[in-house]
Each structure stands twice: as structure tokens, then as C-alpha cells.
Length: 206
Image (tube, rainbow, N blue to C red; front, side, top):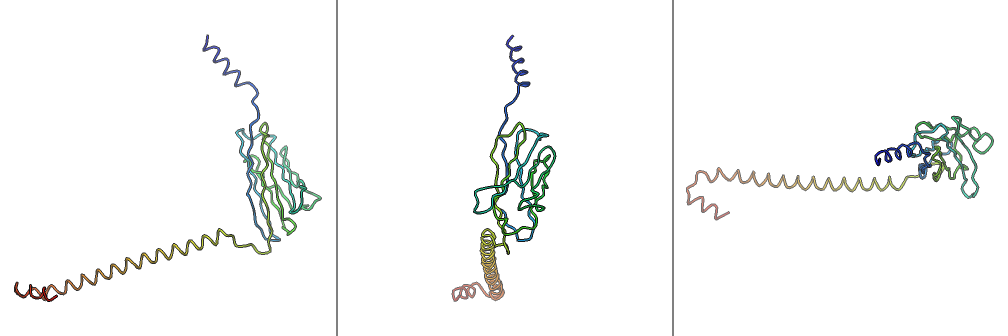
């Protein structure tokens, strides 16, 4: 009887409606680009569910110094919709692959006025609970040298100098040992023809 009840409970749990679970959205933290260039802003998500036919992505943009954001791209129902009258008119394109959890967009012909925060929100029903993710875009006339690159170069130079010092040290030891061995070998024939007393005397002189 207990086995029957246990089996029945498993079956009921299997067919009962399941509550939505959290969805996690991922973007870069910060991107740098040159004025006049294009940039791809990536957006992916993690969900325990398989990809739903109702999966959707929404991108919003907030300019630097502003508290208000505007919608610039949206994907839903298998169709992509982009800004057709705002600051990104004809400059934003949905280039993601929703079936691979990819909701990336392409911003074309960047301008200094595009500096700001881009926020991506993804839904994969019934997983609709989750926080959007934001990436900050900085547009430059010339890309700055990142601190990480400078640090890496300094570390590389220091390591190179250490390796060079170690190589020189062991090379000097080898040359000294070779010189000592050569001198000792040369002294052997000189003592070979001497008597025992003469050898002892020669050794004492040394």
C-alpha cells in the first residue's frame, strides 16, 4: 500500500504545474570603442528551462548624466524590433541567436554622445524572475592603454630579467668549474714522472 501511495505522489508531482525559477542575465561590465566604429554588445542568460518559444530580450539605453532610459531593441515572438526614430535610428541591429540564449545587438557608427549604460533583460517563460544586466559603453577618439596591459608588460620584463640573471649565474659557475678542472688536468703530467718524495715536495710548495 505504501509503495502505491509513493508512486502516486511521484506521478502527481510530475504532472503538477511547476513554479517559475530565477533567470540570470549576463553582459560585459564595460566596453571601449573608437568613434565611428561598430561594436557588438553581448547578452546571454542562464535558465534551468529549455528555450521557450516565447523567449524575449529587451535592450534599454541610459545616456551618461541622465536618469531616464529608452528602449532601443526588443526581440519577442521570433521577431526583432529596433529603434526607428530615436538616437539609434538605423544604427542598432539585433544580431543574437535566441535559440542559443544569445540576445546581442550591434551598434553602428558610434559617436561620443553614445556614451552611457546599456541594459539587457531576458525572459524565458515560465522563467521570468531575474535582474537585468548592464554594460557601460565608453567611446574614445583613441583607445586608452588599459592598466592591465601595462602591469602585464612590467611583470614580463621583470621575469625576463630574473631568467637572464639565473642563466648568467649558472654560466659563470660552469666556466669557473671548467677552468679549475682544466688547470688540475694540466698539473697531472708534471707530477707523473716525479718520485714520491718529489711529488710530496711539489704538493707542499703548492
